[in-house]
Each structure stands twice: as structure tokens, then as C-alpha cells.
Length: 298
Image (cartoon, rainbow, N blue to C red; front, side, top):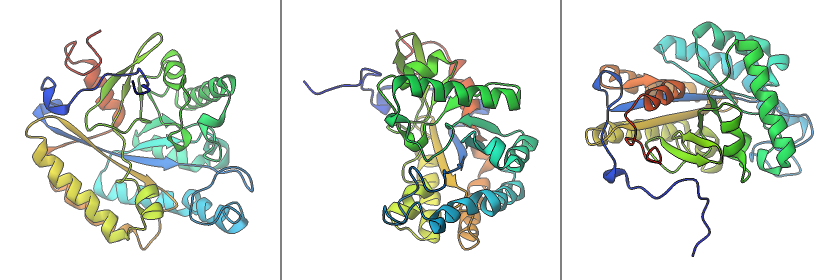
């Protein structure tokens, strides 16, 4: 027998009960903004340079560009196009760059737990350290936003064997760390269940631009091609299409025009889609009849 995580059973998308999003829409689209703060000279960075260079001042400041400039350019674009956003937040940003959080708060955007800093991979912590990180992140967002976060995305999408259990016990409703589906599904935890929200690996500039070396035009094309195909596929079943952005990547001036093109294409179909945030998707799933979504029949 193969090793298994035990969190959910196999389920093909064609075998599931049908449902729709609000107003009978069939394709939900959300945009995730990664708001990340890095330690200077220590920990993980992003693989844009060799390991001996990634923590030098040059690449630290490359990442910091996102908090000083890129974030605000992307927010201007979102305002221009009336795009709702979800912000996965390294909570160190509250002290490091409070203007960032104030701008998102003023729009009524969603805040997602994303640890303290992306210099630390969550799976490298002890269980006690991981629990402390979840508690710190939750309390910091709750203190500042007056409401606890519904969702979590671990720094580097890294989980231990107990991450989902601890998230559910800390009050989280969904996680974006599992990327195997185009629909949300429920996962088992030791004291209940937690929703696994679709999250992109390739419609993610961190992978597409950095690891795969795609040009801004190719990244925009991937968004457009995925949207067009998923809009067609959603006639058959409800789907979720996420796009993930990092402020120090897509916030660069030469990448923004192609990103604008992709988003303009999406909003030209606004009447056909549910342009939303993952927290709203979670709430909609919770309101569906029991047994509609895989993992909800125990």
C-alpha cells in the first residue's frame, strides 16, 4: 500500500453532486495578493539568485520593492478595474509597513493568515513552534482587524503532519496549502473538518515568472487561456479559478500592462462569473446541503 495523508478520499470531479455559486454563476474567480516581509540576511528568500547571493542586500532590497512600490501599483490597478482582493499577510507587515494594511482595509478586502515572515518555512518548525506561529498570526490579525481570519496559507505552502489539525482548532475555516482540485473539498482533522480552497501553482507569478521564466505576456496569456477554458468547463460543474500575485514581481512597471490586459479580459465577462474572495467561497460552501461537497458526508 502507498503511504497516504488520510485527510480526504479520492474523488473525481465528474462524480460529484452539482451546485452553483450565487446568482447561478458557475465560475468563481479570486485574486490573491502575497504581502510578505523578509528577514535581512537570514532565512529563505526567493530562488532568483544562487543561495550565496539570495540573502545579500541586492536581493533583499529586490523583495522589499514590493512593500515600498509594487504593492501600491497593484492596488491602483485593482481600484482601476474594481477587483476584489484577498491579501495573505505576513503579520510582520503591521509593524514594518502599516500603510499596506490600511490601504487594503479601506477597500474591505479579506486578510488571510500567512505567518510572521516568508523567511521561515512553517514545516521546518517544531509542533510547539508551529502552534505558536498560528496563534501569533491569528491574534495579530484579530487585534488589528477586529475579526479573526477565516483562511490560512502557510509560508512556502509548507505543512507539518499536524498543520490542518492545529488550524481547525485555532478557528480557521479553510486552508489554501493543498492544490489538487478546481473545487473546494473538505479535509478531515482530529477534531472536525477544514475546507481545502483551490490555490494556483502556475497562475502564480512566484512559480511562473521565477521558476519557469515566463515573460509578462506569457503569464497574462496563461491567465486568459485558463479563464476562457474554465468558463467553458464551468457549464458542466462549478469551478474556482484563483490567481496569485507577489508585489515584488507583478508590481514591476514592465509587467503591469500585460497583467492589466489579462484582468480586463476577465472583467469583460463580469456578468457571467462570480468575482469574489476565498472567504466568500468558504461561506457559500458552508451553506450548501450536507453531502454536496466531498468530505462532508461523514
